[in-house]
Image (cartoon, rainbow, N blue to C red):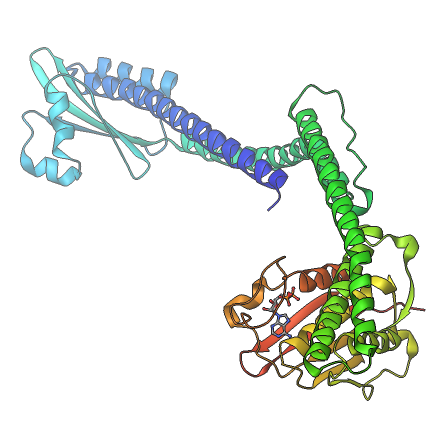
Length: 453
Ligand code: ADP
């Protein structure tokens, strides 16, 4: 989930809990206050009824009743029971009210009790040496309606508030994250090809300004390191190239000498092969450095993969003359567009030569099959050998520079060729898949997007 949405949700949840707590408080406070006022109204009526009951003179009793009727009126379902003191257990049972309710009026304090929407009060009335307990009950229909309305109002208010809170929360968090999203967009656009680009730093004097500056500092350091690496690889490969050409030339000359002993011939042959191999490696590193690690686009052109693979075979023949590399053209797509990719021919050749030479090397020169096919997006080149294979747990590391699998002690190598090949394929928006079984062989499958014409 995006941070903006997370913030909006947290903000909404927080506001929701505050509004709910406030609503509960308001509801209970209103309920308490309405109920207290209703009890009070019931107590007043109860008191009048009690005094009327204790009045000896009939005319004064009717004054009480008339006064109550005219000035106070009846509450909904109002009922009064006048009980003589002391209360016997039977009466208490008939009324079905808790016994504590009857203890309070006995001690002189009015008792209040609420059950099934009905309010009960009990008053102890004493007059002229006589004492009675008046138990009155009524239903606060008006109060109940008030509470139902309040409840409805609070729920609707809560829902409307939530919609507003979420909308505003989202709007504000989107606004706050706008500069960060812009930074992410800009950083995504920076790659090895335009490492000189920098983020625009707004003078906002806040964390966003700091973040942009930090990114720019990091890009400065990256650019310097990148250039140093590029220059080093370029200079080193350049320096190696001339002596290697001299070595292989001298070895070739030695081989052509007549009457050379067999052991010396073998030696010259070995020197020649190894020098060719090293020349190939430094050549591919040089071309990688010269074209830039992003394979500068101006040196890109249309490359026919079948032709490229033929030139790879030629390069392999030079280095391992007795190799058993066979190219299978049976699955070639009929449409030649599906064989044409947009790329740097030197780099692609270096990549495939590395993979093919590895297949020859790690299979002790057993047959290596190259299949060229296409699906609806990629030209696919499969290079299949019957060699030593790669241990399962090490397959994931073979593209890491200088990594060599544990079963390669008897083979010479540097761990550079495959990472280089993988980088080149990735540079061409392609991918490489490896399937291998120790003792049975390895299959490298490269996918390069073909050029749509
Ligand atoms: P190296 O110079 O060691 O061959 P690479 O970078 O070309 O370096 O290859 C890296 C590692 O991948 C090799 O050391 C080897 O363990 C493994 N590997 C590459 N190709 C094959 C293959 N065809 N069969 C078995 N192992 C291979």
